[in-house]
Image (cartoon, rainbow, N blue to C red):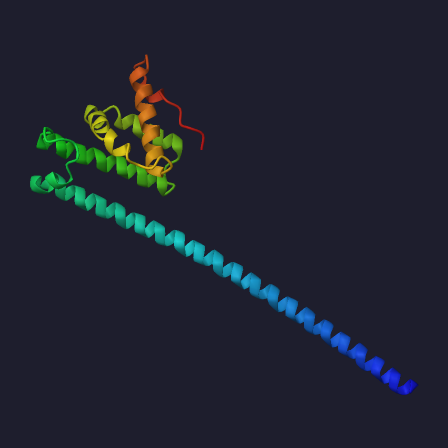
Amino acid sequence: MATQSNGIRALSAAALVGFALGGATLALTMQQRREELRIRVEQLERDEVAQRRRARAHQQGMHWALLVKAIDDPSLAAVINTYSAEVPLEKLRQYFYANAWYVNLFHLQQAGLLDQEQLVGHLRDLFQSEVFVEYWRATRHNRATLPHSSDEAQLGDLAEHLLEELEEADTDVWWVVGDPPPS
């Protein structure tokens, strides 16, 4: 019996070693799979960001193409005239062009090509144009409909605040008026 008992113990020890090796192999395989999945998820996230950037660039191109058509053709300009019937065609075309500049700044900021300080600098420049200021005032009702948490609304609020500061400034040194908000 003692021999049989030793044989069972040896078999049991060998089985335990086999189970341990199998468990370690399984754990290693699971860890490798988790790592492969993590890498795949990161790649999918990068692909999604790239796809959004391509979609944004395409949208910006479409926006510009549509605005150019409206600027060039008064019958098409009437389709997107949300200002008022009293706005003369020439002024309407200027508003569309001002909108193109503003939307361009928005896309540059969204793409990470402009930081807040650069954005404020460009807005300061645009607000030196009387036509741009008129456009800005004429489109307040459009911006009021944006969800307050949207990027577009936040940019509009930033620009609105800057315009107020420029109008209240007691200086001819307009390029130093307004501090960009902390990033």
